[in-house]
Image 1: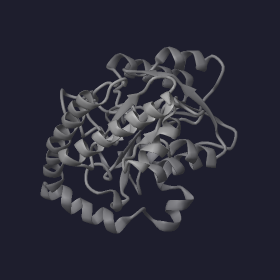
Image 2 (image 1 turned 120 degrees about the vertical axis):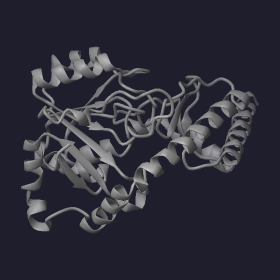
Image 3 (image 1 turned 30 degrees about the vertical axis):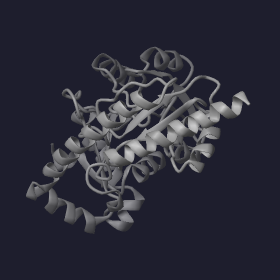
Length: 309
């Protein structure tokens, strides 16, 4: 990795905003996974972009859906979360990664790969990140220290081809400021060079692996009628309730039981799945996770009793 391929940002959100500013204009079309990081569509809407959802399954982005949409649209970029997806937990399999890169080069669109969870894998070896493809101008990988050190640092990075880096560093914003969050960057450099960053990531992996296993076990013990796939990394479990369950309404009720989650519709520019919910296991220890799952069970039981009455 060369310094010519790295650009420091103030996190994923600001990176997306900067990339939209430099590489799109109002009314341009972009592709976004049908279920996605809930802040991203709001950023794209701020730039007045036309958002086309691309279908997904448990192995990530569906290439067939992408190919079908490419027949009718010419996107400026595709925004994807290819590993330990937020919120679904899915990881894009290798064959699809290869085909995605081929399509990006063939149809001349950028891949914005949000890889903030790449270093947080809890089982087998993860696929190589898109960040390794700095020789391809169509690929822009985004990373963040928020998930591997501290959210309040507001520091991240872009890893991409040197030509794109040059476009970033010669932008008006950088010409004015000379850099993004340079003081924090200097501190983080010391943390990385000391080896403390690697040690912290190892600690997080062991801690989060245990919490994921605990949440999975407790869900199986206490909650019936939901389905989910256990992710191999990241922060989240994506629950699918029966079709008749509206998780926005369920969330309102859950808060009276002092438990919370994110409703599925929040994670889509088009309204999203009404019967899904995202649970986060990263912030809580096993006792707190158990308390939350038990409260969710009580909420669901009360919700069912209310419907029957």
